[in-house]
Amino acid sequence: MTRSQPRRARGTVGHAYSALNLRFALALFGLVSMTVFAVLAFRVHLAWLGVVCAVLAVVAVVDLVVIQRRRAARHREEPGSRHSLFE
Image (cartoon, rainbow, N blue to C red; front, side, top):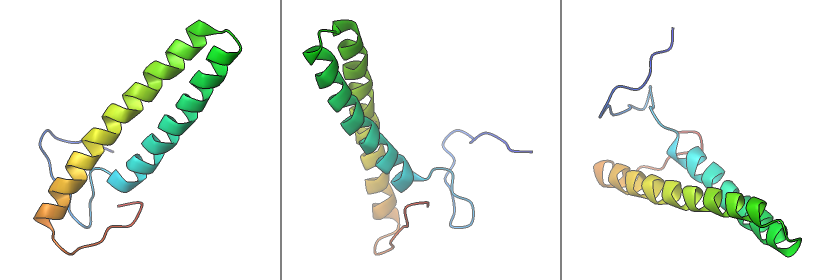
């Protein structure tokens, strides 16, 4: 049985609660793709689709900021350690 992440829980090397580097890569992909789709939608005069894609791009930017703050906190707690994409 898989439990949800407890509030304010910190992962360990053996049991990570958040794959920050993978989440960062996925959010970056979402930002780039939604920005491209928004531009294309506005060019073909589909304003509603362009707005939806632009809103999703803004959500990706907010997620990137949150991820960077958590990664910085992790680097302060574990100086000198390197994390793979899936940690």
